[in-house]
Length: 192
Image (cartoon, rainbow, N blue to C red):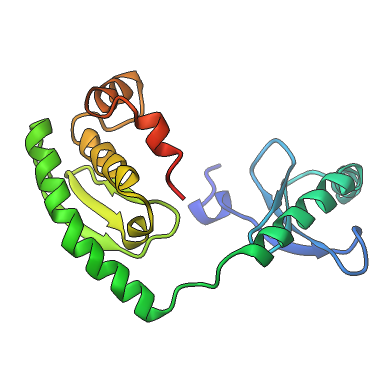
C-alpha cells in the first residue's frame, strides 16, 4: 500500500516537561530510525524520534542526556546574550547598496580570469549562506557578505563561480578553487 506523500512526512510536536518545571522539550516524530537532540537558536529543546518508539524510551533518552541538554542550553543562552542586535531596515538597505556597488565588478573580474559566464546576479538578505549558484549558473549573494573582509568576499565570489564548472563540493571543485585561491582555507576563517 502506498501512503500519500503528506503521510510520509508525518510529524507532530508534543511539549514534554521532564527536564524541569522551567524547561520542556518538543517531540517531533517522523519516519526516522534514530533519536536525536537539538538545541535551537531560540533555546528550545527538540527531540526527534521514530514514529513507533514508546514515550517511555524517549523520556529515558532525554533523561540520560540532561547534563548535555543543560550545558548546551547555557551555551546557547550565552551566545544569544552576547549577539549583536538584529540589523535595522536602514542597515540592510545600506548593505544591499554596498553589495550592488561592489559585487558586480568583482564577479565580472573573476569571471574573466576564470573563463566562466554567470547568467545572472542577485543580492538577497539570506542569513544562512553568503552565496549560491543555481543550476542555470545564476549567482545569488547575501548582502550580509559585505560585513566580511575583502579577502572573504573574494572567496565567496570565486567559490560560487567555481560551481559553474563543478556543481558539487568534490575533489575537482576544491582543486579548481585552490587553483584561483591557493589560500582559500585561510580566507574561509575570515567569514563571520
